[in-house]
Length: 264
Image (cartoon, rainbow, N blue to C red; front, side):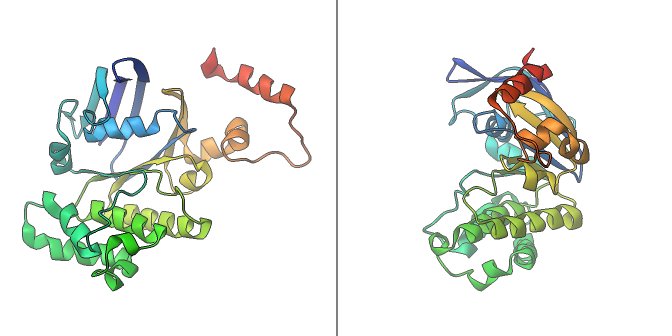
């Protein structure tokens, strides 16, 4: 569905933010982009969604292809109309508007306006708390409820691909689990492809089919979720898992960094 080939993106005409990355998102699959803060994950989805002018991003080389069509030069509203929705980091809901009004704004891409009621009913099935608070100002929702609203707002546009930027950010673990369970259900039941940007590799790989590890604007490793979860270095440095009874010294950490093939 989505194919990125050799993409190079600069930030502020100076910083090379993405350094020749390539990745794919197949239909009906969940793909995770993992890595530390500043690794380039958010730049990827901002470039895909077309909000490059406001972020001072310029595509220097490579292609972004969605359903066999190059979208490098498409504007954000055109990309939404093609079937790509983004849930930004920090949720970015319209706090002064009600839950209902936020959903109505999200539905502007629907060519058939009568379909809004059905889409609204659908998201209320996944997020019943939003239906109970549909007349309430969105700014008074909890952090988890605002994240649910941001996802619901993306879904009412009837997208083929939803890009989620750090949906676990600032949320309690129990809320994170609830939201990720719902994301997995939406993918499974509505057949919506998901591109998931996360620092929490453990929770992301719990639902993803495939993952890409980012460091310094490059894809340094990729594979199926089970392959990444079993990789010794990924388990230790991204999932926080170590062998029982082992202790890592600073020397061991330095050896690990020398060992990483992508730094050669």
